[in-house]
Length: 264
Image (cartoon, rainbow, N blue to C red; front, top):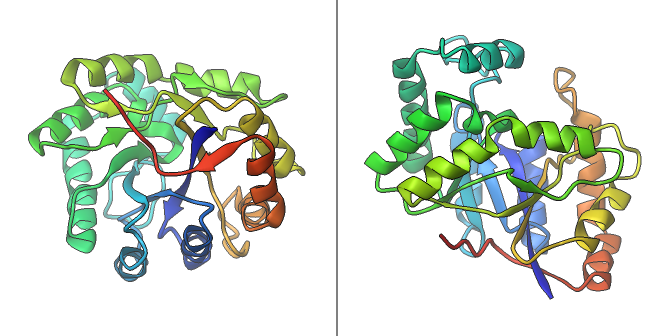
């Protein structure tokens, strides 16, 4: 039996996403979620999450690309990538934003995050990863950081999977190993958000699952945000993860759903 952890990104981005994640935690489909603490819905959503979070891992979904308001530090993703690889980001602003997002998490949840990941995987970008790891060491962080260094691709999505892995995963892994910060080893969940058969994608990931595989997902109960380019995919993900077919697929491929068991 391989242990697999499904982790839902974007908790608190909007009520439809939060409601889907809360429900899937209760059904045992999800054992981790990462939170967007800059969202206006975060304080209320966090209180709901706290009541059912004893048997899951709750992380910080670090954000530098989604503009929740005009007063937070964000960039369009292409601009952020150019600035990161050109070493043109302001390290002080990056540190301040990380600290603000971290403090909002701690204030609401009453503890440090169990793990850190990034919206659109920005936590592995140059400059951001160095500032992040330095900050985590200052905080005596005892959790883990999401890594894409060893992805399990689904068919027709191998190129995107490879590209995302090359955007800093190996460098982040080396920094974390040097600083003795834990990471997941295996990762799945990457696709173009246009598939009309999300179940088939999951069957591929589960069929090739290694023990302690982390699978990223993005469920929502409804597609209400017209500015969200993946809103339709979110609903499809929710319906599959909330279905009897999902649990049957787990049994078929001898999968045990559980939180991540991370080792150095």
